[in-house]
Image (tube, rainbow, N blue to C red; front, side, top):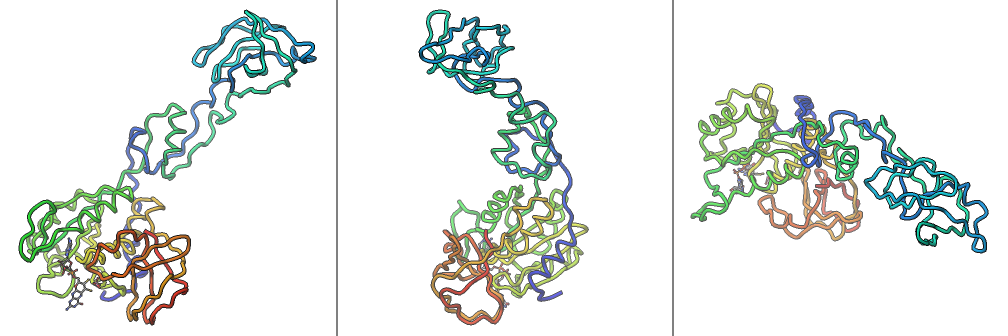
Length: 400
Ligand SMILES: Nc1nc2c(c(=O)[nH]1)N[C@H]1C(S)=C(S)[C@@H](COP(=O)(O)OP(=O)(O)OC[C@H]3O[C@@H](n4cnc5c(N)ncnc54)[C@H](O)[C@@H]3O)O[C@H]1N2
Ligand code: MOO
């Protein structure tokens, strides 16, 4: 298929793939951003025992009835309990236990009086006002009941979830395994960053850009070194690497030039071409193929084009495969600040900054230019056959 709509391309690819159901058990420290595969039920109560929320004395509320400044009630302190200790005593009439914040409340007590409201004299504590039962009393399980459904499966674990899991004594969780996404840039002109730049060559920006983007989306990028424009060699490399991958992304070599080798690579691989060219700019010449049951998305070499097609086409596919809702592109509407003085014959994605509903466009937005993407956080989706866009026009955006 040649020249299909963006939505059609996404649908076609999405119909080819399924959610990757495999899971693994990881330490809590490794679980941030991961997708829980089973419901988590609380194995214990939180707090695990009745406890004091204050430093003070634990008493029987009934023993404070009638206490006031003129007639304080005197309590005998029979024990001191600190957080981490278990109380050994049971409170009798007129007795109190000196207690610290977080310490278990002793049997028989039903209230805590804060230290500042108590006058201590040796082994005695004087109380000048009455307290009601269960004041300053933290119940066992008042936060979490044992057996309660605490975190639903498919939740993406945040720092808060991990804190709650740790509070339950949990140190490992079952999470969906991360997608392994292969990345291969092609092009005779590519030089690995860090090496000297030679005449006519450019540094490979795409591999680093997309690898970082994949990591941001919670996936594992498996970087294959950049390949020369040699279809035999590229096809061999793909065959060698594909068994380790869930999906492969390549960049470069998809247009109509004499070294746009990916068309030949498809033949050498005996892969099936799903489509070539999507009605959007940049990134038009994206090529999608299927090798066995695996997808290979070959994005255009221009870094911004590669990024735009990654965001619009690869992300929804990766979203379905990973089961992570945040991987899908998020769409919004904004109001254009400043005009966009260019006619868009084709559907166009331009970079922009989306801030509280306002959208601004940087000066430079050519497909080969990546630097002006710094500071941008969205793509503006401009329909085909749109004339210049005036300031104040409502525009559709895809957030990055
Ligand atoms: N006669 C035509 N020429 C072109 C057409 C066309 O329809 N007819 N389409 C243009 C469009 S649109 C695009 S987009 C590019 C796409 O070209 P390819 O995807 O085949 O990519 P390359 O030619 O390999 O590279 C394009 C450009 O990007 C640079 N590049 C490539 N890889 C990287 C990388 N890893 N890091 C940084 N930069 C990279 C490369 O040097 C080129 O400058 O084709 C147009 N031509
Ligand atoms: O589709 Mo190309 O990416 O315009 O430059």
